[in-house]
Amino acid sequence: MRSLRLRLFVLLLALAAVASLTVGWATYASVRSDADQLFDDHLRQMALSLRDQGRIADDERAAIESGQFDYVVQVWSLDGGVLYSTVPAPVLPPRAVLGFSTVMVNGAPWRVFAAATPLRIVQVGQPLAVRRALATAAAGRSVLPIAVAAPIVGLFIWWLISASLAPLARVVRALRERGVEALEPLPAQGLPSEVSPLIDAFNALLARLAAAFDAQRAFTADAAHELRSPLTALKLQLDLLHGARDEAERNDAVQRLRAGIDRAHRLVEQLLALARAEPGTTAAHAAVDLAQVTRQAVADTAALAASLGGSVDVQAPRELMLRGDADALRSLVRNLIDNALKYGGTPPQVRVHLGRGAGVATLVVDDAGAGIPEAERERVFDRFHRREPGRGSGSGLGLAIVRTVARAHGGGVQLANSPLGGLRVEVRLAAA
Image (cartoon, rainbow, N blue to C red):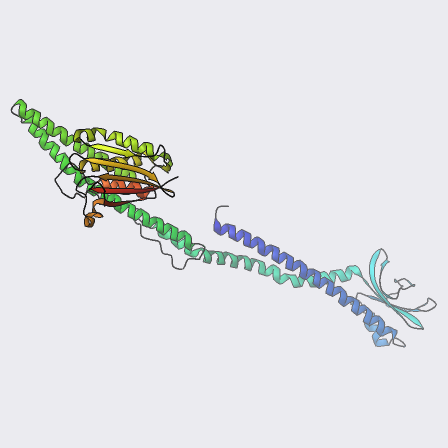
């Protein structure tokens, strides 16, 4: 039973049915008990009334002998003679038990009340079958309103459930009528408190999706803009190679084309690294040795350091475990070292320090370059931002990748002045 409406209706209807049956049975038993008590009182009053009279008057005799009554009256003398009986032949036993008793008459149970005087004994009896039939009829009439009201209660329960679930139905209709790109929050007015947290959580999800889509559209637009320039440059360099007049011009055009391809390759790599580091796209976190990842990143940049005549000094523990994405963390460290080598002076001097604090892994990269003024330090984390456009081969994505990866691992990035005279980049990550 997957329908919440039907499930509630069945459960509430079953509960109402059990309650109705319980109340009906209690009412039935109570009415039968009260009817029995009423019949007993009637027998006792009749017997005591006849006992106190000297004789039975003619009008009273005619009344009690009427066939419309379902009881028997017998009056006995003390020696056992029948003084009076409402039936031709006595049916009640001559030896009476004073007060109430249940006796068998012709194989059927009778309820009898007997009262005595110094001169006679009065017995009034009634078949139990008759009184039970009358009591059952009275009890049935008392239960009849409950039976009639049961279907009405069922219809009211269905209406009540439908009215209670109407706000949820409105939300479902609003979702079905939305377009594919509609990410506006759902209306939360008039919703019950049990449903509001679900709608709030769904609206929060829609807000995150809207932010992610906006960021993705902005990223796609920026990437298309940034790729246009190197591709245009490659096309021009290819034209220069095709139009070279001698071997020297051809070699120079080949070198320029190779450099352009390298720049385009680097840009594409960084775009892919940034896309992988976006929230929601990072791989599932597993146990990672950050010290080993750092040494691998240093090895990746060894060729660049050698070509620039620089050096990279690494201070790291033997092992530093945390939970994260090894490829993303390797990209983070490589981008920091790559930037430090490119802008760390001539020749570049880079120092990498890896340590652990109270539940925090700290990666510090210092260089001996010109540094970044404090007023510009926040802007350098923007995508495709270059402090000196047109100078150098950078794409303006390195620090954006670093911040994105750090945030995906529950950390952050800070820029400061380095003891070496250049820039210090400090990354804090949650350690295992």
